[in-house]
Amino acid sequence: MKAAETTLAAGGSYFLIIGAENQTRVSTEQTPGYANTSMIGNTAITTYSPGSTYNMIKPGQDVMVKVLRIRAGETPPQGAFPADDIVRTIGPRLKTS
Image (cartoon, rainbow, N blue to C red; front, side, top):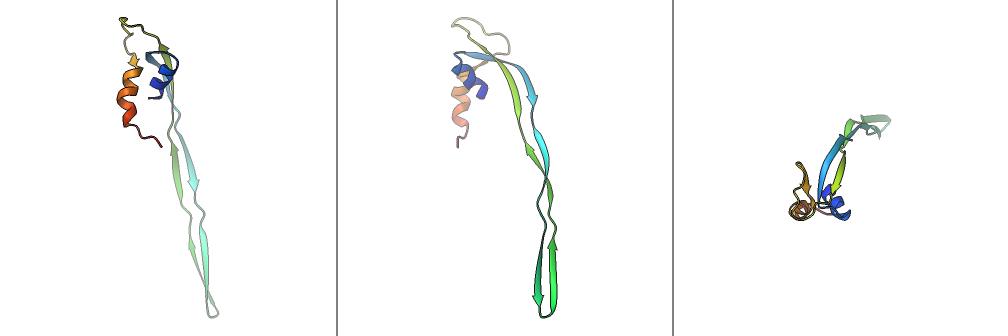
């Protein structure tokens, strides 16, 4: 969708994907543990809850596109995507926040 929008903004009508690279990042995160101590008379009772470790995944994708200006009646190259069709058909189905 972004490639189609970029193509239209640049005055193009079609685009070719000429390169793509996965930019997903994975990191390990940890929550802290905590201890709670209660006194009952002269007795201290401590309860400890350890932290947890989890993986954080941040997906990403870099895509290189070539914007094409195809005139009416010209045949676009094989593999070219029509930007206007993509924006018109997919755009309304995307959630915007």
